Image 1 (cartoon, rainbow, N blue to C red):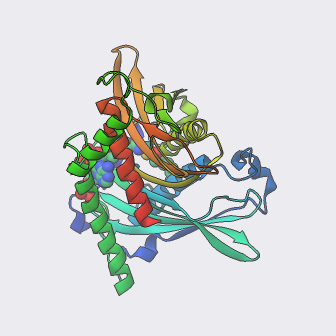
Image 2: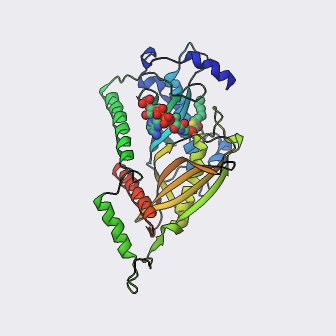
Image 3: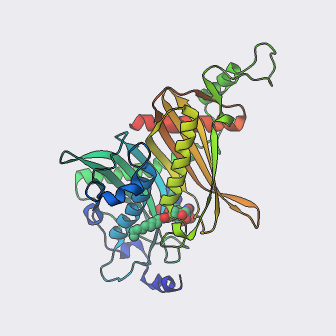
Length: 369
Ligand SMILES: CCCCCCCCCC(=O)SCCNC(=O)CCNC(=O)[C@H](O)C(C)(C)COP(=O)(O)OP(=O)(O)OC[C@H]1O[C@@H](n2cnc3c(N)ncnc32)[C@H](O)[C@@H]1OP(=O)(O)O
Protein backbone atom coordinates (compact mmCIF):
# COMPACT_ATOMS: atom_id res chain seq x y z
CA UNK A 1 0.00 0.00 0.00
CA UNK A 2 2.92 2.37 0.78
CA UNK A 3 4.25 1.70 -2.71
CA UNK A 4 0.81 2.20 -4.28
CA UNK A 5 0.38 5.62 -2.60
CA UNK A 6 3.05 7.02 -4.94
CA UNK A 7 0.84 6.15 -7.93
CA UNK A 8 -1.69 8.89 -6.99
CA UNK A 9 0.16 11.38 -9.19
CA UNK A 10 -0.64 9.25 -12.26
CA UNK A 11 -4.44 9.60 -11.84
CA UNK A 12 -6.33 11.76 -14.34
CA UNK A 13 -8.00 14.87 -12.92
CA UNK A 14 -10.80 14.74 -15.53
CA UNK A 15 -12.12 11.96 -17.74
CA UNK A 16 -11.59 14.15 -20.82
CA UNK A 17 -7.82 14.08 -20.16
CA UNK A 18 -7.76 10.34 -20.88
CA UNK A 19 -7.50 9.10 -24.49
CA UNK A 20 -10.70 7.40 -25.77
CA UNK A 21 -10.60 3.67 -26.46
CA UNK A 22 -12.42 1.42 -28.93
CA UNK A 23 -14.15 -1.85 -28.02
CA UNK A 24 -11.50 -3.81 -29.84
CA UNK A 25 -8.73 -2.18 -27.74
CA UNK A 26 -9.85 -4.16 -24.70
CA UNK A 27 -10.82 -7.36 -26.54
CA UNK A 28 -9.10 -10.42 -25.04
CA UNK A 29 -9.21 -14.14 -25.79
CA UNK A 30 -7.96 -16.61 -23.20
CA UNK A 31 -7.73 -20.39 -23.53
CA UNK A 32 -8.29 -22.69 -20.56
CA UNK A 33 -6.56 -25.82 -21.89
CA UNK A 34 -8.62 -28.53 -20.15
CA UNK A 35 -8.35 -30.74 -23.24
CA UNK A 36 -4.69 -30.31 -24.04
CA UNK A 37 -3.30 -30.04 -20.46
CA UNK A 38 -4.92 -32.83 -18.39
CA UNK A 39 -2.97 -31.86 -15.23
CA UNK A 40 -5.19 -28.78 -14.70
CA UNK A 41 -8.47 -30.76 -14.91
CA UNK A 42 -8.42 -31.78 -11.23
CA UNK A 43 -9.05 -28.20 -10.08
CA UNK A 44 -12.12 -27.93 -12.34
CA UNK A 45 -13.63 -31.39 -11.98
CA UNK A 46 -16.88 -32.04 -10.06
CA UNK A 47 -18.30 -35.38 -8.96
CA UNK A 48 -20.61 -35.54 -12.00
CA UNK A 49 -17.59 -35.55 -14.33
CA UNK A 50 -18.30 -32.04 -15.54
CA UNK A 51 -16.74 -28.63 -14.83
CA UNK A 52 -17.25 -26.85 -11.47
CA UNK A 53 -19.20 -23.69 -12.20
CA UNK A 54 -17.69 -22.01 -9.12
CA UNK A 55 -14.25 -22.22 -10.77
CA UNK A 56 -15.67 -20.61 -13.92
CA UNK A 57 -17.02 -17.73 -11.79
CA UNK A 58 -13.49 -17.16 -10.45
CA UNK A 59 -12.04 -17.13 -13.96
CA UNK A 60 -14.71 -14.73 -15.25
CA UNK A 61 -14.01 -12.33 -12.38
CA UNK A 62 -10.25 -12.29 -13.04
CA UNK A 63 -10.78 -11.92 -16.79
CA UNK A 64 -13.26 -9.05 -16.28
CA UNK A 65 -10.68 -7.15 -14.25
CA UNK A 66 -7.92 -7.91 -16.76
CA UNK A 67 -10.12 -6.59 -19.62
CA UNK A 68 -10.67 -3.34 -17.68
CA UNK A 69 -6.92 -2.96 -17.09
CA UNK A 70 -6.43 -3.45 -20.83
CA UNK A 71 -9.03 -0.73 -21.56
CA UNK A 72 -7.33 1.73 -19.17
CA UNK A 73 -3.72 0.83 -20.02
CA UNK A 74 -1.40 3.79 -20.70
CA UNK A 75 1.72 2.75 -22.59
CA UNK A 76 3.81 5.39 -20.82
CA UNK A 77 2.92 4.13 -17.34
CA UNK A 78 4.92 1.15 -16.07
CA UNK A 79 2.15 0.36 -13.56
CA UNK A 80 -1.55 1.21 -13.48
CA UNK A 81 -2.55 3.64 -10.73
CA UNK A 82 -6.06 2.16 -10.71
CA UNK A 83 -7.54 -0.39 -8.32
CA UNK A 84 -10.25 -2.09 -10.36
CA UNK A 85 -12.89 -3.95 -8.35
CA UNK A 86 -15.99 -5.94 -9.25
CA UNK A 87 -19.12 -3.97 -8.36
CA UNK A 88 -21.79 -6.14 -9.95
CA UNK A 89 -22.40 -9.36 -11.80
CA UNK A 90 -25.32 -8.11 -13.84
CA UNK A 91 -26.11 -11.37 -15.59
CA UNK A 92 -24.66 -14.76 -16.49
CA UNK A 93 -26.86 -16.88 -18.76
CA UNK A 94 -25.92 -20.49 -19.42
CA UNK A 95 -26.63 -21.95 -22.84
CA UNK A 96 -25.49 -25.49 -21.95
CA UNK A 97 -26.31 -27.64 -18.92
CA UNK A 98 -23.02 -29.55 -18.89
CA UNK A 99 -19.47 -28.32 -19.44
CA UNK A 100 -17.03 -31.11 -20.37
CA UNK A 101 -13.90 -31.45 -18.20
CA UNK A 102 -11.69 -32.68 -21.05
CA UNK A 103 -12.23 -30.13 -23.86
CA UNK A 104 -10.48 -26.77 -24.18
CA UNK A 105 -12.46 -23.70 -23.14
CA UNK A 106 -12.12 -20.24 -24.69
CA UNK A 107 -13.09 -17.03 -22.90
CA UNK A 108 -13.52 -13.82 -24.89
CA UNK A 109 -14.60 -10.35 -23.78
CA UNK A 110 -14.28 -6.59 -24.01
CA UNK A 111 -15.47 -3.39 -22.37
CA UNK A 112 -18.95 -2.70 -23.77
CA UNK A 113 -19.96 0.51 -21.96
CA UNK A 114 -18.20 3.13 -19.88
CA UNK A 115 -19.51 5.67 -17.35
CA UNK A 116 -17.24 8.08 -15.47
CA UNK A 117 -15.53 5.56 -13.21
CA UNK A 118 -17.41 2.34 -14.02
CA UNK A 119 -17.07 -0.06 -16.94
CA UNK A 120 -19.45 -2.72 -18.21
CA UNK A 121 -17.68 -5.84 -19.51
CA UNK A 122 -19.28 -8.47 -21.73
CA UNK A 123 -17.68 -11.92 -21.72
CA UNK A 124 -18.43 -15.19 -23.48
CA UNK A 125 -17.32 -18.73 -22.79
CA UNK A 126 -17.07 -21.34 -25.56
CA UNK A 127 -15.99 -24.97 -25.58
CA UNK A 128 -14.19 -26.93 -28.27
CA UNK A 129 -16.19 -29.80 -29.86
CA UNK A 130 -15.24 -31.53 -33.11
CA UNK A 131 -12.95 -28.68 -34.09
CA UNK A 132 -15.45 -25.85 -33.39
CA UNK A 133 -15.91 -23.59 -30.38
CA UNK A 134 -19.59 -23.76 -29.26
CA UNK A 135 -21.14 -21.08 -26.97
CA UNK A 136 -21.55 -22.11 -23.32
CA UNK A 137 -22.39 -18.87 -21.49
CA UNK A 138 -22.68 -15.08 -21.80
CA UNK A 139 -21.80 -12.79 -18.91
CA UNK A 140 -22.10 -9.08 -18.12
CA UNK A 141 -20.12 -7.61 -15.22
CA UNK A 142 -19.68 -4.03 -13.99
CA UNK A 143 -16.25 -3.04 -12.66
CA UNK A 144 -15.40 0.19 -10.85
CA UNK A 145 -12.03 1.97 -10.95
CA UNK A 146 -10.71 3.33 -7.67
CA UNK A 147 -7.58 5.23 -6.68
CA UNK A 148 -4.34 3.31 -5.88
CA UNK A 149 -5.39 2.86 -2.23
CA UNK A 150 -8.94 1.80 -3.18
CA UNK A 151 -10.42 4.75 -1.28
CA UNK A 152 -12.10 6.95 -3.91
CA UNK A 153 -13.44 6.46 -7.44
CA UNK A 154 -11.05 7.21 -10.32
CA UNK A 155 -11.81 8.22 -13.92
CA UNK A 156 -11.51 5.70 -16.75
CA UNK A 157 -10.90 6.21 -20.47
CA UNK A 158 -14.04 7.04 -22.50
CA UNK A 159 -15.28 4.45 -24.99
CA UNK A 160 -16.06 5.34 -28.62
CA UNK A 161 -18.41 2.98 -30.49
CA UNK A 162 -17.20 2.54 -34.08
CA UNK A 163 -20.12 0.93 -35.92
CA UNK A 164 -23.95 0.80 -35.69
CA UNK A 165 -23.60 -2.62 -33.94
CA UNK A 166 -21.22 -1.15 -31.37
CA UNK A 167 -23.53 1.84 -30.87
CA UNK A 168 -26.35 -0.62 -30.13
CA UNK A 169 -24.15 -2.47 -27.57
CA UNK A 170 -23.19 0.85 -25.95
CA UNK A 171 -26.86 1.95 -25.82
CA UNK A 172 -27.72 -1.38 -24.21
CA UNK A 173 -25.09 -0.67 -21.52
CA UNK A 174 -26.75 2.71 -20.82
CA UNK A 175 -30.16 0.99 -20.65
CA UNK A 176 -28.80 -1.68 -18.31
CA UNK A 177 -27.74 1.07 -15.92
CA UNK A 178 -31.24 2.66 -15.99
CA UNK A 179 -32.89 -0.77 -15.58
CA UNK A 180 -30.77 -1.42 -12.49
CA UNK A 181 -31.85 1.90 -10.98
CA UNK A 182 -35.56 1.07 -11.67
CA UNK A 183 -35.19 -2.42 -10.17
CA UNK A 184 -33.53 -1.03 -7.06
CA UNK A 185 -36.13 1.78 -6.66
CA UNK A 186 -38.94 -0.78 -6.73
CA UNK A 187 -37.09 -3.00 -4.19
CA UNK A 188 -39.39 -4.58 -1.61
CA UNK A 189 -37.02 -3.22 1.02
CA UNK A 190 -38.16 0.29 -0.03
CA UNK A 191 -41.65 -0.10 -1.48
CA UNK A 192 -44.78 -2.16 -0.80
CA UNK A 193 -45.53 -5.02 -3.20
CA UNK A 194 -47.82 -4.34 -6.16
CA UNK A 195 -51.55 -5.12 -5.90
CA UNK A 196 -51.04 -8.31 -7.92
CA UNK A 197 -48.19 -9.41 -5.63
CA UNK A 198 -50.28 -8.69 -2.51
CA UNK A 199 -52.98 -10.99 -3.89
CA UNK A 200 -50.41 -13.74 -4.49
CA UNK A 201 -49.24 -13.51 -0.88
CA UNK A 202 -52.77 -13.50 0.47
CA UNK A 203 -53.75 -16.49 -1.66
CA UNK A 204 -50.76 -18.42 -0.29
CA UNK A 205 -51.84 -17.44 3.23
CA UNK A 206 -55.43 -18.61 2.65
CA UNK A 207 -54.17 -21.82 1.12
CA UNK A 208 -52.27 -22.66 4.33
CA UNK A 209 -55.08 -22.01 6.82
CA UNK A 210 -56.31 -24.96 8.82
CA UNK A 211 -59.98 -25.33 7.76
CA UNK A 212 -60.80 -27.22 10.98
CA UNK A 213 -59.77 -24.51 13.44
CA UNK A 214 -60.48 -21.41 11.30
CA UNK A 215 -57.79 -19.41 13.08
CA UNK A 216 -55.22 -16.96 11.74
CA UNK A 217 -52.56 -18.80 13.70
CA UNK A 218 -52.81 -22.47 12.79
CA UNK A 219 -51.23 -23.10 9.47
CA UNK A 220 -51.07 -26.31 7.45
CA UNK A 221 -48.53 -27.13 4.77
CA UNK A 222 -50.27 -27.87 1.44
CA UNK A 223 -49.32 -31.10 -0.43
CA UNK A 224 -46.06 -31.15 -2.45
CA UNK A 225 -44.81 -28.11 -0.56
CA UNK A 226 -42.10 -27.15 1.89
CA UNK A 227 -42.06 -24.25 4.35
CA UNK A 228 -39.49 -21.63 3.40
CA UNK A 229 -37.95 -21.92 6.86
CA UNK A 230 -37.10 -25.56 6.02
CA UNK A 231 -35.55 -24.70 2.65
CA UNK A 232 -32.35 -23.05 3.78
CA UNK A 233 -28.72 -23.89 4.51
CA UNK A 234 -26.01 -21.94 6.27
CA UNK A 235 -22.23 -21.90 5.94
CA UNK A 236 -19.20 -20.22 7.47
CA UNK A 237 -15.98 -19.25 5.76
CA UNK A 238 -12.84 -18.02 7.47
CA UNK A 239 -11.23 -15.63 5.00
CA UNK A 240 -7.59 -16.74 4.98
CA UNK A 241 -4.86 -14.62 3.29
CA UNK A 242 -4.60 -17.28 0.53
CA UNK A 243 -7.86 -15.87 -0.92
CA UNK A 244 -6.74 -12.23 -1.05
CA UNK A 245 -6.69 -10.23 -4.27
CA UNK A 246 -4.06 -7.79 -5.50
CA UNK A 247 -5.53 -5.07 -3.23
CA UNK A 248 -5.28 -7.19 -0.07
CA UNK A 249 -9.01 -7.83 0.17
CA UNK A 250 -10.85 -11.11 -0.42
CA UNK A 251 -11.07 -12.03 -4.11
CA UNK A 252 -14.60 -11.52 -5.48
CA UNK A 253 -14.42 -14.75 -7.51
CA UNK A 254 -13.76 -16.75 -4.32
CA UNK A 255 -16.83 -15.17 -2.67
CA UNK A 256 -18.90 -16.06 -5.73
CA UNK A 257 -17.63 -19.65 -5.74
CA UNK A 258 -18.45 -20.14 -2.08
CA UNK A 259 -21.90 -18.55 -2.45
CA UNK A 260 -22.63 -20.57 -5.60
CA UNK A 261 -21.68 -23.85 -3.93
CA UNK A 262 -23.92 -23.13 -0.93
CA UNK A 263 -26.71 -22.05 -3.32
CA UNK A 264 -26.31 -25.28 -5.27
CA UNK A 265 -26.41 -27.36 -2.07
CA UNK A 266 -29.54 -25.48 -0.93
CA UNK A 267 -31.25 -26.18 -4.27
CA UNK A 268 -30.11 -29.82 -4.10
CA UNK A 269 -31.48 -30.42 -0.60
CA UNK A 270 -34.80 -28.75 -1.40
CA UNK A 271 -35.31 -30.18 -4.88
CA UNK A 272 -34.14 -33.71 -4.09
CA UNK A 273 -32.38 -34.22 -7.44
CA UNK A 274 -29.38 -32.76 -9.25
CA UNK A 275 -29.79 -29.04 -9.97
CA UNK A 276 -28.11 -27.37 -12.98
CA UNK A 277 -27.31 -23.66 -13.00
CA UNK A 278 -29.35 -21.68 -15.55
CA UNK A 279 -28.63 -18.09 -14.63
CA UNK A 280 -26.85 -15.83 -12.16
CA UNK A 281 -28.06 -12.28 -11.77
CA UNK A 282 -27.64 -9.05 -9.89
CA UNK A 283 -24.77 -9.98 -7.58
CA UNK A 284 -23.94 -6.70 -5.95
CA UNK A 285 -20.61 -6.35 -4.15
CA UNK A 286 -21.73 -3.88 -1.52
CA UNK A 287 -18.55 -3.69 0.51
CA UNK A 288 -15.11 -5.33 0.43
CA UNK A 289 -14.40 -8.36 2.61
CA UNK A 290 -11.27 -7.93 4.73
CA UNK A 291 -8.70 -10.71 5.09
CA UNK A 292 -9.38 -12.55 8.37
CA UNK A 293 -13.14 -11.92 8.30
CA UNK A 294 -15.66 -14.48 9.45
CA UNK A 295 -17.97 -14.75 6.47
CA UNK A 296 -21.45 -16.05 7.23
CA UNK A 297 -23.42 -17.36 4.24
CA UNK A 298 -27.16 -18.13 4.21
CA UNK A 299 -28.77 -19.91 1.28
CA UNK A 300 -32.55 -19.74 0.94
CA UNK A 301 -34.85 -21.20 -1.70
CA UNK A 302 -37.14 -18.23 -2.37
CA UNK A 303 -39.29 -19.44 -5.20
CA UNK A 304 -39.91 -22.62 -7.21
CA UNK A 305 -41.89 -23.29 -10.37
CA UNK A 306 -42.06 -26.70 -12.09
CA UNK A 307 -38.39 -27.83 -12.26
CA UNK A 308 -36.96 -24.37 -11.49
CA UNK A 309 -35.48 -23.28 -8.17
CA UNK A 310 -34.66 -19.65 -7.38
CA UNK A 311 -32.04 -19.37 -4.62
CA UNK A 312 -30.82 -16.29 -2.77
CA UNK A 313 -27.53 -16.37 -0.87
CA UNK A 314 -26.91 -13.63 1.64
CA UNK A 315 -23.35 -13.09 2.84
CA UNK A 316 -22.27 -11.00 5.79
CA UNK A 317 -19.14 -10.47 7.80
CA UNK A 318 -19.24 -10.80 11.56
CA UNK A 319 -16.96 -8.66 13.66
CA UNK A 320 -16.32 -10.61 16.87
CA UNK A 321 -14.96 -7.50 18.67
CA UNK A 322 -17.95 -5.24 18.05
CA UNK A 323 -20.43 -8.11 17.57
CA UNK A 324 -21.70 -6.32 14.47
CA UNK A 325 -22.91 -7.96 11.24
CA UNK A 326 -22.47 -6.23 7.87
CA UNK A 327 -23.97 -7.45 4.60
CA UNK A 328 -21.32 -7.75 1.89
CA UNK A 329 -23.21 -9.43 -0.97
CA UNK A 330 -26.56 -10.77 -2.10
CA UNK A 331 -26.43 -13.50 -4.77
CA UNK A 332 -29.31 -14.69 -6.97
CA UNK A 333 -29.09 -18.07 -8.71
CA UNK A 334 -31.66 -19.85 -10.92
CA UNK A 335 -31.34 -23.64 -11.13
CA UNK A 336 -33.19 -26.28 -13.10
CA UNK A 337 -33.66 -29.62 -11.40
CA UNK A 338 -33.91 -33.05 -13.02
CA UNK A 339 -37.35 -33.60 -11.43
CA UNK A 340 -40.28 -31.33 -10.56
CA UNK A 341 -39.60 -29.63 -7.21
CA UNK A 342 -41.91 -28.92 -4.23
CA UNK A 343 -43.43 -25.45 -3.92
CA UNK A 344 -41.89 -23.26 -1.21
CA UNK A 345 -44.40 -21.63 1.09
CA UNK A 346 -43.72 -18.49 3.13
CA UNK A 347 -45.13 -18.29 6.65
CA UNK A 348 -44.13 -14.82 7.81
CA UNK A 349 -44.39 -11.39 6.12
CA UNK A 350 -40.58 -11.23 5.77
CA UNK A 351 -40.54 -14.62 4.03
CA UNK A 352 -43.34 -13.46 1.74
CA UNK A 353 -41.16 -10.54 0.65
CA UNK A 354 -38.25 -12.93 -0.04
CA UNK A 355 -40.70 -15.07 -2.04
CA UNK A 356 -41.85 -12.09 -4.14
CA UNK A 357 -38.27 -10.90 -4.67
CA UNK A 358 -37.33 -14.42 -5.82
CA UNK A 359 -40.36 -14.48 -8.12
CA UNK A 360 -39.29 -11.13 -9.64
CA UNK A 361 -35.74 -12.38 -10.27
CA UNK A 362 -37.11 -15.60 -11.75
CA UNK A 363 -39.46 -13.71 -14.08
CA UNK A 364 -36.62 -11.43 -15.24
CA UNK A 365 -34.45 -14.48 -15.97
CA UNK A 366 -37.19 -16.32 -17.88
CA UNK A 367 -37.76 -13.25 -20.06
CA UNK A 368 -34.13 -13.38 -21.20
CA UNK A 369 -33.43 -17.08 -21.74
C1 LIG B 1 -4.77 -8.33 -13.40
C2 LIG B 1 -5.90 -9.26 -13.63
C3 LIG B 1 -6.17 -10.25 -12.53
C4 LIG B 1 -6.80 -9.55 -11.39
C5 LIG B 1 -7.61 -10.45 -10.62
C6 LIG B 1 -8.02 -9.75 -9.36
C7 LIG B 1 -9.45 -9.43 -9.42
C8 LIG B 1 -9.79 -8.57 -8.26
C9 LIG B 1 -11.25 -8.24 -8.35
C10 LIG B 1 -11.82 -8.40 -7.02
O1 LIG B 1 -11.66 -9.39 -6.37
S1 LIG B 1 -12.73 -7.12 -6.36
C11 LIG B 1 -13.38 -7.80 -4.86
C12 LIG B 1 -14.86 -7.85 -4.91
N1 LIG B 1 -15.42 -6.55 -4.98
C13 LIG B 1 -15.43 -5.72 -3.93
O2 LIG B 1 -14.92 -6.00 -2.87
C14 LIG B 1 -16.11 -4.38 -4.12
C15 LIG B 1 -16.88 -4.03 -2.88
N2 LIG B 1 -17.69 -2.83 -3.10
C16 LIG B 1 -17.16 -1.60 -3.04
O3 LIG B 1 -15.99 -1.41 -2.72
C17 LIG B 1 -18.06 -0.46 -3.40
O4 LIG B 1 -19.41 -0.81 -3.17
C18 LIG B 1 -17.91 -0.01 -4.89
C19 LIG B 1 -16.49 0.47 -5.11
C20 LIG B 1 -18.22 -1.12 -5.87
C21 LIG B 1 -18.89 1.13 -5.16
O5 LIG B 1 -18.67 2.11 -4.21
P1 LIG B 1 -19.68 3.34 -4.07
O6 LIG B 1 -21.07 2.84 -3.90
O7 LIG B 1 -19.11 4.28 -3.07
O8 LIG B 1 -19.58 3.91 -5.53
P2 LIG B 1 -19.79 5.37 -6.02
O9 LIG B 1 -21.11 5.89 -5.57
O10 LIG B 1 -18.57 6.18 -5.70
O11 LIG B 1 -19.88 5.16 -7.59
C22 LIG B 1 -18.74 4.87 -8.34
C23 LIG B 1 -19.18 4.25 -9.66
O12 LIG B 1 -19.60 2.90 -9.41
C24 LIG B 1 -20.87 2.68 -9.98
N3 LIG B 1 -21.50 1.66 -9.14
C25 LIG B 1 -21.49 1.60 -7.80
N4 LIG B 1 -22.16 0.52 -7.38
C26 LIG B 1 -22.61 -0.10 -8.49
C27 LIG B 1 -23.38 -1.26 -8.73
N5 LIG B 1 -23.81 -2.00 -7.74
N6 LIG B 1 -23.66 -1.58 -9.98
C28 LIG B 1 -23.21 -0.86 -11.01
N7 LIG B 1 -22.46 0.24 -10.87
C29 LIG B 1 -22.18 0.62 -9.62
C30 LIG B 1 -21.55 4.04 -9.92
O13 LIG B 1 -22.61 4.10 -10.86
C31 LIG B 1 -20.39 4.92 -10.31
O14 LIG B 1 -20.18 4.83 -11.71
P3 LIG B 1 -19.88 6.10 -12.64
O15 LIG B 1 -18.78 6.89 -11.96
O16 LIG B 1 -19.47 5.54 -13.95
O17 LIG B 1 -21.15 6.87 -12.71
